[in-house]
Amino acid sequence: MTMTTTTPTTSGPIPLDDYAPIIGKPEVDELRALAASLRGHSVQMVNSTAVGGGVAEILTRLVPILQELDLAVRWDVMTGGNEFFGITKAFHNALHGGPYQLPPESFETFLANNQQNLSRLSMDGEFTVIHDPQPVALIKGRSNHSGHWIWRCHIDLSHPNPTVWEFLEPWVKKYDAAIFSSPEFVQKLPIPQYLFFPCIDPLSEKNQELPPETVRGILDRYGIDAKRPILTQISRFDRLKDPVGVVGAYRIVKRYFDCQLVLAGGSAADDPEGEAVLTEVREAAADDPDVHILNLPPWSPTEINALQQASTIIIQKSLREGFGLTVAEALWKKKPVVASAVGGIPLQVIHKHTGLLAHSVQGAAYQIRFLLSNPALAAKLAEQGHEHVREHFLITTNAKRYLTLFRYLQAGG
Ligand code: UDP
Image (tube, rainbow, N blue to C red; front, side, top):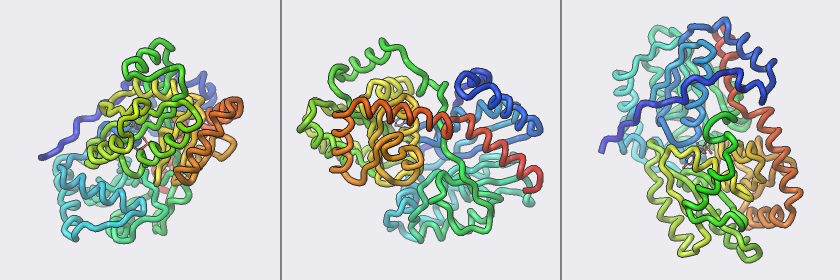
């Protein structure tokens, strides 16, 4: 079967002034001032899925903000079949430190797919931002060293599998700059490397405060009891998100608290492993009526927002994590968070300040029990988490970093 991705739809124009009550008018003015000399200049963003996962989530909101600042921004999604996305998922797992066992021909298939996409896409942006490994070889289409090419890596590259990284590295080196989400992910590269935090949009359907009746309606729809504690993990059904480990932690907590577990996820066009993982999670949950496994359509921002808003504690028990936008989303909603100390998560969850970190199923269960027993402390951590997100992880900060980088490259680097 050939899987082609849909044309991405963004949220449409976002009036910048709407952000002033959240970040202050001076910040909004600064964004406009930074963008002034870039007015009309073209930017092309390329990734591998229009919906599902953090990269699509960011682009859906970042593209309209940059457009609002009068940059000529285009977002293209590469296409691929099951074989290609099977290979790129194997790359993804290997770059996160897992084993890599595909035959050498997979590298050729990967390059052939990038070549096919090159014949379909016109790579003519003045600033081209390629997201993640899937489209990394599109830089082959750069003509005469024209334009500025940036590789934006969202993956936790702290322990990349050498076979895959050695294949990708020569492509990455062709770029003018690379962007990573944490200082821990930096590589030995001959090009400048920048640190950009991923970000959430406080005004998006996913993050705006919902009326209580909307939240209640969504809980009712899924048979979730609003009166008992709700532990939630929102994530694609991916083994690196450890949903089975979350069920294990819940089972320990359940001995002490009459709580419920919500595991809500969906699929992404570039992740073919979701079905198998969903089956594993269903088996782990067995027939516990207090475990709600929700396989949501990829575009369900209001449902996810409501589930986050209704939760007593949000869990993110990833085994590896580039950043974990779901953590920022939870903190922004002033939710106590228990999350694994991996990848980009400790940038967001500062232990005992903005949430609690854990290193195992037992550790996660211990921290959840601790927060359920100490609601005042849980509320304080959540409040501090909200401010931490405001300061570092909002889309306006991300837009500012892109504008600064574009201006720097425009000026000759
Ligand atoms: N998400 C979603 N539907 C789902 C699961 C996740 O919309 O079924 C969203 C989630 O709210 C977050 C993003 O997808 O905005 C996931 O980003 P994250 O960085 O947490 O993980 P990734 O999927 O990129 O590894």
